[in-house]
Each structure stands twice: as C-alpha cells, then as structure tokens.
Image (cartoon, rainbow, N blue to C red; front, side, top):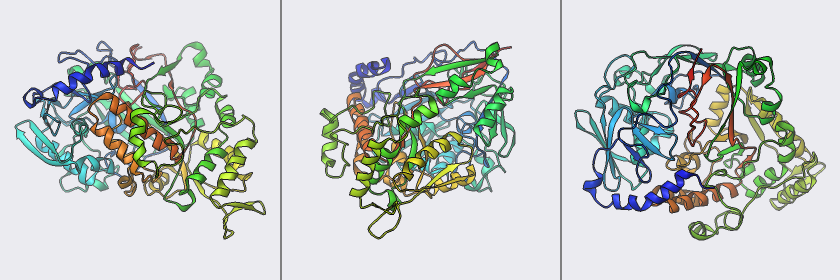
Length: 604
C-alpha cells in the first residue's frame, strides 16, 4: 500500500506547477518549504505532529555506542566524532519534519523566500536567535559558517557550496543564496547547514580542531563534560533561545543526554542490564527475543518498544572497493554475492527473523520492481543499456540459497562466474592465468562482534572456493582513517536512505565524490547512468518522474553488485527504562535522527 503522504503529494503536483508560474506569487516569505507542494503544517502550527507539546521536562537518557571518538567537531573530515553531535548540538536556518518526505520549517530563520524556479533562496533570521554563550546570531555568522564549511569543512558540504553562485546580505537579518545550476532541491538543502560562531574561530584552524575546542552552537544542548573515547555528556541549556518556538515544542525535554562508549557490543549489553544505560537499540531480532528476559524486563522496569517506519531499507552489508583490481569485474562481485550464504547466516544470527535487503530503496515506494524495467523507468535506462551490468534493465534479484551450510548450488554458480572472469582452481587455490592467488582483505572495526561472526561464516564458504581472505580488525580511529582514504578491499557498510533522495546521492554514488577522501562512495562507483538518474531526481517537477528516477537509480545500484546485502531493519527495537516515554504518534521516518531522544521525556 502506498503511504498516505505520497497520495497527498500526487494530488499536490498540479497545484505545484501553478505555484511555479508566477514569480510574484512565489517570491513571498513563507514559514516553511516542501520539495513538492506545500508544507503540511500551517503558519500557526503548535508543534510537530510527532512531538508532545505538554511533555514534562527533566531527567536523563544514557545511551551506548560501540567504538570510540577523538574529536568533538562533526563538521570536519579529521577525527572520529560521536555521530549524535551533529544533530543534537547544532542548529540550522531551517529544521526538518520527519513526518513528511522532505519539508523544512523555520528554525534560526523565521522565514524563507525563493525565486519562481527556486533559482535563489533568501532567509530572514529570527531576532531572538542566539548562541549558547548568549551572543546573538548575526548574518556575519551565517556567511562565515557557509563559506567555512564549504571550503574547509567535511567534503559533504563542498558539493552544495560549489553550486552557490553568490551569497549576500540583503537586509539587517536577511541573506540570499543564488545558485549557479538548475537544481530545485538546493533551496531546501542550503537551509540545513549548521550555524557556528565566527568569533570563536578567529586565529584558529577550523579544519584541525579535535577535542581542544568545542564549536559553539545554538542548539538546546551543550557539551557539559567528556572523557575522550569514554563518554560525552550533553546538558540542556536553561537559557536556550528557542524554547518557545512551535517547531521546538515537545522537543529537548531531557535535562541530560549522555553517550557511553564501549569496545564490545556484549559489554555494552551487560552495562544496560546492570542499569548503567537506560536506553539501548537492539539490531538483532534473535537477541531481542532470546536475551531480553533479564529481571528488569520481567519486573517491568525495562520496556521493549518496537518502532515501525515507512522509509527505505537503505543498504547494510559488506562493500567491495572497485578501485582495487580484485573487484573491478562485476562477475567477480556477483560471485562474492553468490558465495555469501545469506539464508544460513540469517538463521544462525537472527533465527531467520529478519528479511534480507533486496535493493537500496526496498521497503518503500521508491524501490525497484521485480522483472524488466517498464514505462518511464525503462525510458530513463535505455540510453545506457550498453554500459549497464546485466540485470539493470531486464531485472536482477539476489541469489537464494537452500539454507544448508554447504550451499552447493550457489557455490557452483560462484565458481562458474570466477572462471568466466579468468580465475580457476589450481591445487586447491583460486588463481589467475599467471598463477597468482585470488585473495583480498576484509577490514573490520574493533567491537563489531556481529559483523565478525558473519564474516567468519562467509570466510568458510570462500575457503571452499579456494579463496582465503585476510580479516583485519583495527581500532575505530584507524578504521575511520582507512575508510576515509578508501584503503580497503572489502569492509562493513551502512547507508541509510530517505524518502526524498536528492543532492546527497552524488556524495554516495558520484564519481567526483569517490575521488575525494571522506566521501560516502566507498565502492568507488563511476557510473554515468547513476549520475544521469540523480540529475533526473533533482530536476523532476512532478512526483511521478521523481519516483521513476529513484526506481531507475535503485536498479543501477543493485545490479552494480557493489555490496553484499544482509538483513534489513524494517522496524527499530529499543529497550528502555520505564520512566522514558515517547509520543504515541510516530513520524513516517520512525526511529530516525530527530526522534530519539529529541521528543522523548522522563517521568518519575
């Protein structure tokens, strides 16, 4: 069934075209902006629909993470940062509603105004907006933040910055961005950059910061204390400037958000059982059923909450680096997928409870459909037919094993594919025509016990093919550095995807991004077809064309055979203290950044 929000989007497409006709009608300050149609919430909305404006304030949440950190600046490439800081400790001109595919409402900015074709976007700051040190947010801070992030910040910011033709102050509290390309999404993307305090960085190297300087932001939470690699504590700022904004009603209810770090998942689970943590996400369905029966659960002191969502599955598994000769051939990558005994591994790891990811946008209306491409999807892909791998147009599905340990049929297919690619068995080893063995390195971060167990099972299958991979486990900081530099053959992979894919897709799959350190294009994709589908996504003026482009991109990605997919998380499983509550009304994105712990509260 198509989610209701997409039905609404289809009805608004015609209205959207009429809105775009007149520059005068369009160029008016608005309280929000949607990718298609109008924002769902009116000018006088009381709160986001999934927040409780009457939620009590107080209490704390203590969560756990496997890994470590050596930086508190999430805006640069250097260092490993607690991932939550980017959303909890900083604010942008606009804030996102996670109950709509892609809609923004004013946060630091009281309004947004755009050109007739969204060729420019102008924001007006709220006069009351201020940093956590009590100083006002100025247009100078905004201008500095955008230029600094775009030129010295993490590479994820540079793509959007390169599309800004000019940035200028247009009033005491207004700034206008004019774009140098036709890209309707830019008017939204440009409103989502964190705003930092310019004066803090005078005389300092922004790109070199780590734990020596904590960037000053405007968010309701500030970093109160930390111990490198051990914990970070965020405390709610009692003088937070935006506490009375409708957008923030029912958000930031907790006095403290504390993140504890562990070297191993099992140690973290034991810490939760002992009460050192009061909220824990469980990604394994088998563990959820078998291990969450300890006394606190039986007493009702710990609650098991299952949170559904309507977002795409994204991709989780093991990515193959096509920059390396060993994985340049799609037949070799398909052989690696055939050899991965998913049915047996899933039964071993989750009791067979979690379905497999079938494509990057599976579990959503944007996912590719079975069989040959038809209609607009086929029309988009046909010009690239000669360069696309088999299955992109005529249909591709992942192999299905018989559930046994041996998985003989799929291993035979894998062997045939390796032979087609020039690899044969000689004295029990897979070798090429020169007698060189086929081998590769699998890079894992310390503490990833589940991934390690999966890889151990996978290695057994590869050994039956005459392939002995090297499995290297390193600490999280080294792992981050090596993956930033693409210094791996195969490694773990997780890419969450939204219901509104857009400019970020270039960072995920674009060839230019893949040549720069720190991009999300770990597989090293260089696909003109993928780039063209992203162009259509960005230029689509109606919902149907947008969906067709997403489905076509999904085919290119999946048939590219870049990742060995494992199981999907079509629900989130969160165990938490009974005192921690959340609203009954869930957003369409479910348990996503901006929901947990943002709209949770604590009761005694």
